[in-house]
Amino acid sequence: MEVRAAVAYAADRPLVLDTVQLDGPRAGEVLVEIKATGVCHTDAFTLSGGDPEGRFPTILGHEGAGVVVDVGPGVRSLRPGDHVIPLYTPECRECEYCLSGKTNLCQAIRATQGRGVMPDGTSRFSIGGQPLYHYMGTSTFANYTVLPEIALAKIREDAPFDKVCYIGCGVTTGIGAVIYTARVRAGDNVVVFGLGGIGLNVIQGARMAGADRIVGVDINPGRRAIAERFGMTHFVNPREVEDDLVPYLVSITKGGADFSFECIGNVTTMRQALECCHKGWGTSIIIGVAASGEEIRTRPFQLVTGRNWRGSAFGGARGRTDVPKIVDWYMEGKINIDDLITHTLPLAEINTAFDLMRRGESIRTVLTY
Ligand code: NAD
Ligand code: AHE
Ligand code: ZN
Picture 1: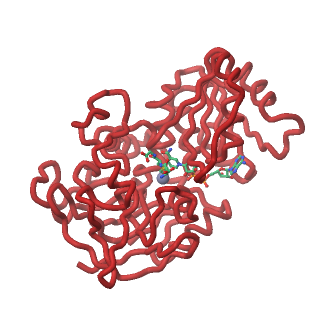
Picture 2 (picture 1 turned 90 degrees about the vertical axis):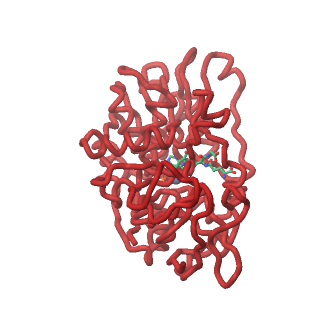
Picture 3 (picture 1 turned 120 degrees about the horizontal axis):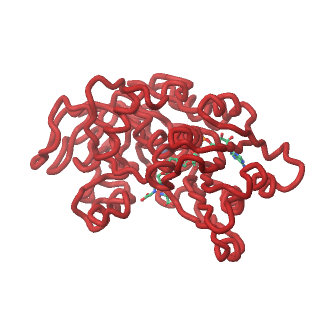
């Protein structure tokens, strides 16, 4: 079939709205009509050319929501009409990783996903007979896409697509990092570096967990008001701190953070996030994605003296199990998504969505189809 897609033909170039060819679902695959998608910083990161797994030409996008249109042979858990959220971290419930109970990083299709193809090694998208790469197994910047069954969470039908698409990445990544990865407890002190589409969800998760001090760090003063609305108790603009940032954060958190979260993707702030943690037990969680070739540094003594460095992908959430629950939390008013979606635009204005993010003017832009 012919579908409408924003194609990334090359790194660091604007996306081009084009009509592309999409083949139907093969065994174990599902055709989904995408109704809405968020634009995450990771899409911009890959488009910039900084992602070692970035391949072009491709159809980016990984924060979508839509409706099942058709299923391939062998698909049992979904049928046409089901409402779904695509999962860049699938959940097969059969691989060693899923069965371990220790991680959400299902590996069933990770290798082909990283190469921009479906599990059988081919692409469903093409233009003029030339294949286009899939992205993160989702490619939600198209009004129809094909995904493996294990990469779809079935959600309730009364949930609005243009809001719950954000659960496909940012909401789950931020809230999940707090409750699934860190397991923040009531009374903990938390520091959040980067108050964008992810960091504000970390703030929201920390408030839900009953954290005491929730310190937000951002160079954009415009983030203060919204972060306070979501539960931040102290704002720190590093450009306004006269002495070193780390001791300042240690003092605000009464000896150091029980948990810190890096939501920027900058290796300097990753080091600061570790070093502002409490001696003896503080844990820093890296969420931000750093560019190809970057490495983190610290004095090993920071770890010898009891600080811990960890990471979190998709908030540690098991997609098919946890995403429908997070949709319920939204529908029950337990989490706020609406106020983080600062812009809603048609797909045709996708390049504006990237510009708004780069200029720090949006938290999340949602594109509708
Ligand atoms: P965003 O652009 O919306 O937010 C980034 C924020 O960081 C902005 O508010 C910006 O002002 C602030 N910032 C930039 N440089 C800073 C500095 N030096 N000091 C303090 N603040 C600074 O981005 P986002 O969508 O929230 O994504 C954040 C990061 O998380 C990105 O690296 C993205 O790729 C990554 N991410 C990771 C996962 C995961 O599963 N691990 C999921 C989604 C996004
Ligand atoms: N492809 C990059 C890494 C990108 C990355 O870390 N992706 C996160 C999700 S970011 C969503 O906005 C993730 O889930 N990583 C785990 C995984 O298996 O990809 C690279 O460096 O190669
Ligand atoms: Zn994302």
